[in-house]
Length: 451
Image 1: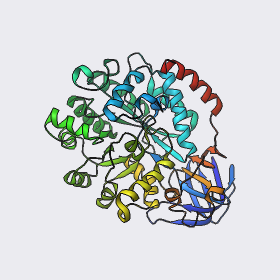
Image 2: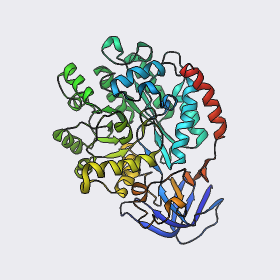
Image 3: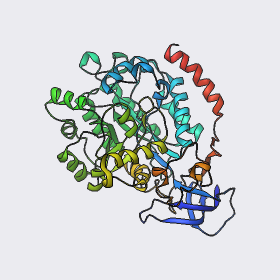
Image 4: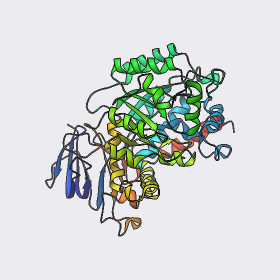
């Protein structure tokens, strides 16, 4: 039996259904599950002294594009909005291969873990011809890091010649996509309670895929019991494009092709009208909020306070590292809190509300809120800890439930535990040599960016 004891924790913010906060407590874990929370101490294979620590459920990143770690902070796209930004960067992204994916995944997921993230959903939809086993490369990176990973089989089948945005070299036929989707689901979709690997089907967006691809993906996903994900209502350009091409708004189009329900979540969801919000609420269709990306690309502000009030499932994601330009869900959490305070005043979610969006909210989007997202007996042992005695937190910890949103954290967390194993210790990733990853990444970047 693999056991872990974290003792003498100053404060445990559980994010459970009763919003329980434990003071001066211990967490005992067996075989990847939390088996005890309370004052008792027990013998364990690994023991951590949590004195002075604030402990939180592992953050769940519900939308990302890890490959974009290698196209960050490029001067030529810094002032572009989404469509021009995409068309410019596709000319870089068409050059990715297994090495690009493996190293960018190590870097991106490593950064997420160093900032308290324990589960990563990655929306990968760029599959250049002859680029190799890209999902396999991500799986190898996830295994190396020890992170809980939700892959996606993203896809595009409309290139520029078909009225879409991507070049011909990164689109595939519907038949190719469906065959590979079946193979990847059979290989990676593990439905066990403590599963470290699951997969979703995730055509890129309604302006880069055909109606056939969306319909076939929805049918296959429901046959195989996997979830559905795509970008939707991110920009006014998208809205205008769909009205011109289909004669209806984006959400009405998605409803027409079977993309509504509690097994579906959309990234962004900025430009929904009142009727559309009601449809989302009535059907349990979810939204992943990505505030930093939305701000950088001037896309708009999602109506998160209203969504929460209506009971729409809402999670948090960092989005692509080239539209963020980082992989830090703690930063995303604080920016979300501040953005909605600015935009909605006293109707905005609290710092603790945003924390719950980033934990239980995102877990719900992934269909895993019974397993992850809170610190409870019987749930997966995924959590992180921050030393409350840091200089930058002096005087800031009287409300530990909200401090991550109101004050924020600078620098890496002290510990990240995933599936009962210590994956970040004293701010360093335990499973990799960080300096070697940086060096190897710099070599690959020279090839990839052509510099």
